[in-house]
Length: 230
Image (cartoon, rainbow, N blue to C red; front, top):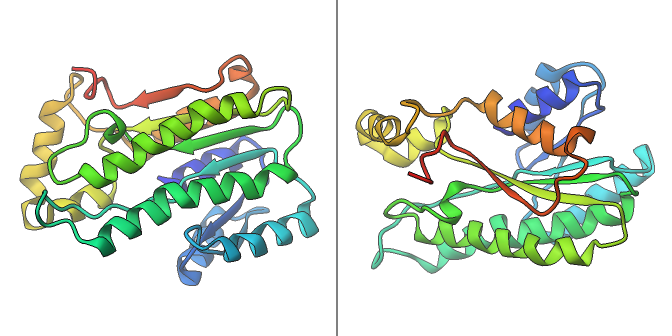
């Protein structure tokens, strides 16, 4: 999903800087994006690593016009099987990582800039075994409810795109050996009879980042075919 967003932004003429924990994955994504895409290895769950990321961006590019905070991690476990390690992993990446990313980027952003956070419909409609993941996404929604006021007067907009089930490897991995049955369940739950494609989420992220959404601020926009509303 993050790659689809990067590709959409690049197609719109933006100079894209991507980041990730795994050097090989970052290099592969930059190669596929081509053009002026740049990759910087960093771990959003570690504030010190992000300090280096934004120092490098300031040195090479001076500013950030659009920030997309997309890092995400989930560990499925039912109540009674939730471990401290899984809890810490999800909150460190999905909540602390968002806080550190947005705070680190703010000094590089100017009036007219836009922040797009990738959330999840789990913020209001978590499936069984996704209680901790859903809690992290609900936390992010409440962070933005406060931040939209904190950013008053800066000219910087902040919004969330919350995808529903999307055709990536992640949901298949979550279902494990029951992947086919799980994907069929998600498809049947959707009022439009299918799950989303990464490119569809990218379109929404690009809209929220663009001047076409200049009067859209502080929203959580669900891109899920209506599944979480049904």
